[in-house]
Amino acid sequence: MYSPTTRLFTVLELLQSHKQMSGSEIARRLEVDTRTVRRYIVMLQDMGIPVESERGPYGAYQLQRGFKLPPLMFTDAEAVALTLGLLTIRELKFPVDVAAVEGALAKTERVMPEKLLHQARSLQEAITFNTSLPPALFGNEFIAILSSAVRQRQQVRLRYQSFQGDETERAFDPYGIVFNEGYWYTAGYCHTRQDLRTFRLDRIIALEPLTQSFERPEHFDTLEHVLTSLAVMTGLEQVEVLVKTSLERARQVITADIGIVEETEQGVIFRRAAYQLEWVAHFLLFLDFPVTVLRPLELREMLRKIAVRADQMLEDGA
Image 1: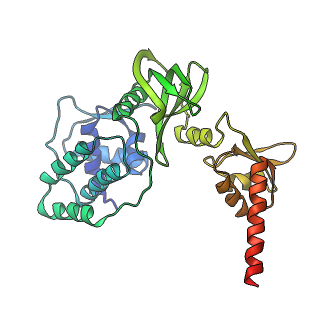
Image 2: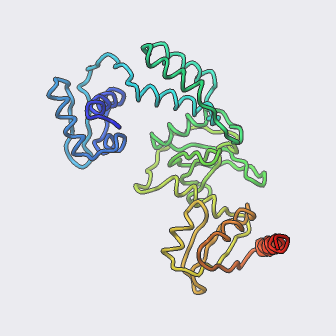
Image 3: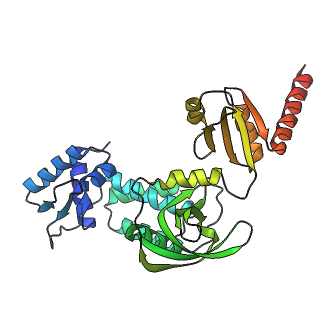
C-alpha cells in the first residue's frame, strides 16, 4: 500500500524523468484522481521545489528549467518492483539482450543498501518461472523503432511476410504495441490497404522510420483492436454459433479476445476465425445457455465425438 509520502516523492521522480507530464497521466500512473495530484504539486511547491504548471484542459506540470535533485534512494517497494520487473522481462523472453538485463540488475544491486540487496537476491533465488512461450524471433531494434514511431506519431515502412508466406511492403502508421500470449503485435493504419491492420512483429522482415507524420485517433484502443483482429482473422473460415441468450449476456461471457458477438435476423451470433477448434468446442460446452453450431462442419463433428466419448465414460462407469 502506498503512503502519501511515497506518492509525493514518486511525483517528484516522474517530473524529473519527463520533460512535461499532464495531471491525468500522473494520476493514471499513481492510481489516484487529478485533485490528489494537484494537492501533491502544491506540497512540492511549498517545499521550495519549483514545479511549474500550465492551466487548461491540456495543462501539464514540469520542473523549472535546469532544476535537478540528486537521485533518491530506492524504497523497499521500489526495489522489489524493479527486481521483479527485470526478472520477468528476462524469463518471458522479451526482445531485450539478456546481457542488458543482467547489467541492469547488477547496477541496481550496486547502489542498494544491505537490507534491500538481501531482498533483491532473495527474489532472484526463490522465484521460479514456469512458462512455455515461443521464442522472440525478431531483434529488439524493431521494438525500439516502433515505440519511438508510436510516441512521435511517425510513419514507418515495413516489409511483412503473411501467414501464407506472401511478402509485401507498405507504409504504416503505428498506433501502439501489444504483447499477447507470447507474441508481439502492432496495430495501426495501413496505407496499402487503406484500413486498420494488425501485424505480428516476428513476421516483419524489415522496418524503417519515415519522415511523414500522422494523427492517431483519440479513442483508439490498441489492445482491443489486436484481440478482435486475432479472433476474426481474415483468410480463414469462420466459426458461427447461434447463442440463445441476450446480446448483453453473450458479450459478458464472450469477450473480444474470444470472438465477436452481434445481433442478426437469426438471433445473437458468435463469430471467430476457425482455428483452435478443440478449444472452441470445450468453451461452448461450458456456456450456461443453449447454443447451436452453424459452421464449420469440423466443429460440429468434433462436438459429436466429444459427446460419444462422454457417453462411453458413463457406460463404463455403470
